[in-house]
Image (cartoon, rainbow, N blue to C red):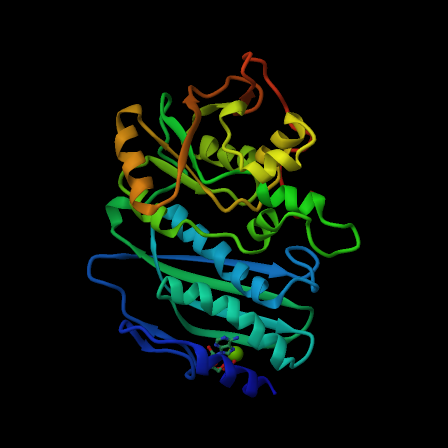
Length: 321
Ligand code: ADP
Ligand code: MG
């Protein structure tokens, strides 16, 4: 059965010219482009932690790849290849096919070849390793932000967190289709990451919530940050779903699962940031500034329009908290 499943997967995996050996041998052989560096990332989605078995399998397949592409985008890399480690409770070919519909829909959009993986029995989990390429001088790291930099985010924040919070407790779907899509089928900002590479100074993708993830930039760069809560980009469905601004801000700064990019850049780069966003077709919003490192207290200060500091109910998603 394992080999039947692998054969099903292999039939649907498309090739790229730089895949010397793909699925079917002991390992894949890949040919990176001249003068480029490889960027490698792995993320695992576990049933019950990252998704519910009741979710559409196509969404689960999509998201397993999307979260990895988001990491490559945050480095500024162009995705090229991936592997898929599939753990299944049983040899459910129909579930596997449906999952692959979502997985390959996203892979094909970005011309990514599935070049290997593993198929084993156990509690449902999908582990994806994604590999991309980048010109060495353009790598976008967490370190590199300077005091005085603008802080930018893409898209809107808090949608996925709202969908999760509003989903019926017994499983099932959040009421609003847009918010649900943002949770179950996030769009990795691949073109934007490419366009910002070489323009922004530091970057990260928002998977655990703005407060936690911007905190990683602050720590790696040795800076602080001041974020204007009223500037956080909010979708109309999010505003409609929130009971008030505090609930909205909680979702936007500490909810997680946004898969938007957060970058810093000097004020002199504003035009270039905006034209990168225009070229990628993704809006970006300036939400604050990086500062000298805070001598005490949190690295990231959240302030309302009156200049008052505000602290969310919780600080972000942590698996072992
Ligand atoms: P081995 O025992 O040498 O690891 P496997 O039987 O596990 O070989 O895998 C055979 C081939 O199928 C390998 O090329 C492997 O990368 C690929 N493969 C296995 N599972 C998957 C999967 N879920 N997705 C993509 N390729 C897979
Ligand atoms: Mg194997």
